[in-house]
Image (spheres, rainbow, N blue to C red):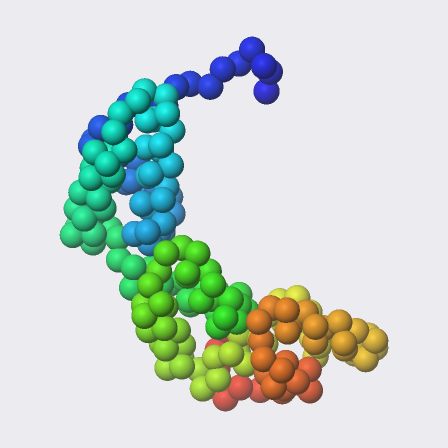
Length: 185
């Protein structure tokens, strides 16, 4: 990008602009209420820095739009948390990692715990299932070529531990315990 090219000024903040920006964001991404509020407030702050205005007034507009979208069903933190938990679990994210991701997205701890509780309904040992998913995806432990398993055992165990899995789960995966009755990918 050349120095001569200037950025377009941000649009002035209005209730309709905030609502359109929120809807446009929600068309592309699933979001929690707190995350959408952060996104909208960044837009508000850029606009206020350029055009001036009162932040509390803009914050009130954002809150009104968020309340309206939640009332219409476009924002549902519990559903967002449940979908995020299922996706992260399938990828092999540990329970600790899932909690961290949800906290970063602004999901309340109670909702995160409730969403994580649904994993226990799907598998007897969700943490073991997630660890197996990660090991399979990254070809660690029993999913590595047999001739290199012993050579990389410590590194594979460390990788699984860094991913947030407990020592007992890591040992079971490394021992080749890959048969989970009632478990599906």
